[in-house]
Image (cartoon, rainbow, N blue to C red):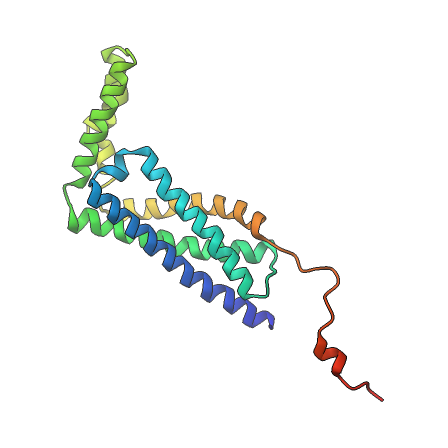
Length: 200
């Protein structure tokens, strides 16, 4: 496989798998929404589960790309493949989020804000904090600052995309170090080479 074909294969497969992982992530979000519209926003364990699933899929499909280019690749190739996947995962996630908050459930930011505020207030109260301290902590939820971050605006979506991609980039650096694989120092002899007539 030539370097050009190898690079093209990595790019094409990474794009394909990035779209696939992004699609799976959206399906998970839809399932969670069917169970409870606020579940993924108010339950830390559910959010963590969805994130872990995406990471596992990055590893699985990263190894799959490696197999398709001969079973070996360096750190740079591994990272490039993973970051391409991450870009398309982030794009699909942001698009889904925009459509959800803008058209499917425009009141969702208000609902999320109210649910988190209620849970937070209960926890702070159980911790025995005085009212002034509680007011300070819950202020962003009461003055609309937190809710504004969920509004489907260009600024918010761009921020979410950039922040999400930054997190993925850090994770990709780690995964790339794990799934990189150098070819053996001495390549095995290919049978076709043995059958070649000697040059006279």
